[in-house]
Image 1 (cartoon, rainbow, N blue to C red):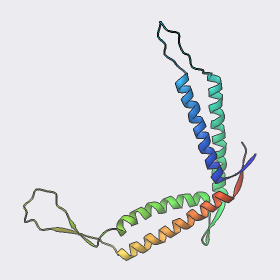
Image 2: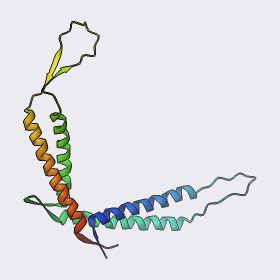
Image 3: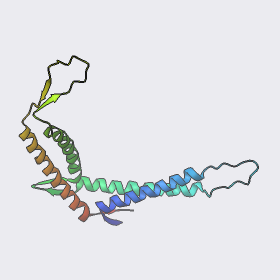
Image 4: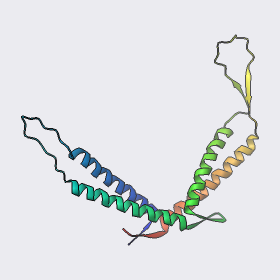
Length: 171
């Protein structure tokens, strides 16, 4: 049984993924070789049983750690402003809010009135067209700031949680 924070668990998972990639690449590079008929072959060192067992061991550790993180994220409660939320709820809510923030960012950057460029080969006497926004620009800016602040609050609470709260992992 090992005690770790979410931040440490994520670093450990990255390290395990790198180890697995090493062994998968080794297997790919060493499981076959090419030799000419008139030359002594250079046979790479390769033991299928060792490589397969190592990859399976790494995969098992990854499963155990990811499961522990998921259980922790579902059960742990974090204070965000005046609300208490589970870590997984925070992650889902942040993703939703970041998508909305992206739309609001586009909207807040629009001019109230903008000339539409015509790219056709019509006559030079064509009447110019204008595009107008159909919303309150100040309201959009306020909403963007509100969502930005909420996302930042959640991120700070999550960062603090990930760096300090420990949980058990049976690896």
